[in-house]
Length: 184
Image 1 (cartoon, rainbow, N blue to C red):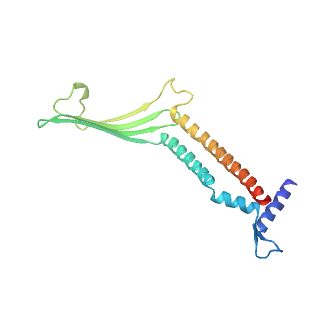
Image 2 (cartoon, rainbow, N blue to C red):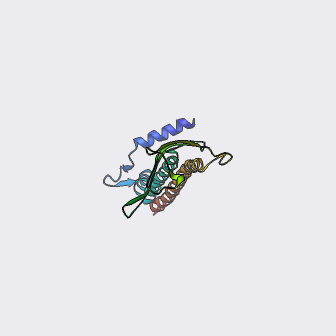
Image 3 (cartoon, helix red, strand yellow):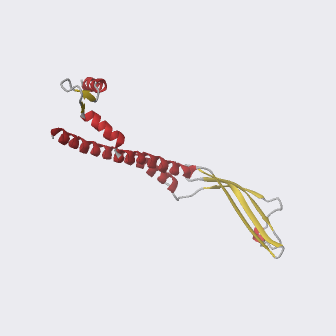
């Protein structure tokens, strides 16, 4: 029954012109409440600002998802003085974070120079590295990346609620103003 009434009301709203002409005054047009509310929804700055909340929510979610993107990294250090290469260090690689806090790492290290410490010496061609980082008993339930993603998803609902609240409040005020104007 309710669906039938909503269908009838919807069809009536679509079929009627919001700027209806009255039969007595053929030259005048009447601004209906529906037309006024449509104008407010299309042109009011508060409504336009509320659409920015959706963009903020999307950008926060995209940023949070970026915490799970693979990362290329590189580090290069060199000391060159008095025409002597004291040392040159390089480390380049890729880190891949996973959902459960585990990170997979692959890279390549190089070291060269005349004055290297024994702990920094590597083969001339460099050294490949592969590793897995597992936080044991740390971040067991949730880590920072997952928490940020969860907060961003929750914020989308909150921003939508704020948008609806602002739009409804504006529609309420616009309806009051319309009826005061119509009364006068």
